[in-house]
Image (cartoon, helix red, strand yellow):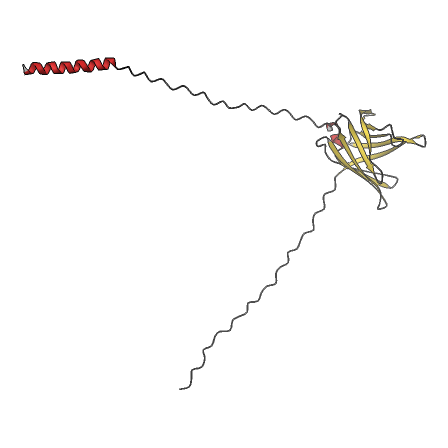
Length: 222
């Protein structure tokens, strides 16, 4: 009989445990973690191609030019086109003396035009608007004009296939047509002057003075 009671107790315990397990809510299955979206690398747009300089057609003028007529030696020096501008300097010398000098620039303007601006010696600057280029007996002639002036009304550069230049200054003097032509040849630009070398001055050598050896005082007489 005790054995039967033990079996009954075990059966009751198992029945109660099973009932409790049946009544407990099932643990939900673990959901997979949402996949993280891949990190999108922003696309780098290709930089637009740089537009050519508006003075690119006149880039051949950059450098140094020289000529001489009637014992007058004259030079012009031009920078390369940069940001829509070229800078120039003219100088005329006779017998070692300056006759005239001139500051020039060719610039692209906000209205789309191109102007040749000249500032002669002791005169206000004047602007001549670019009229374009044309063939002139095998050379290419680039013309700038200012009809409001008498002389010059027109300034032109004719560039030959041999890399020579003929500069034309055209207008009217006392009602008469006048034209002055300056032939140029390309030359090497002068090298900048080197700064004079500084000579290092050596400091005078210091002569070591020997310290006299210390002598012991004579022993006192006994």
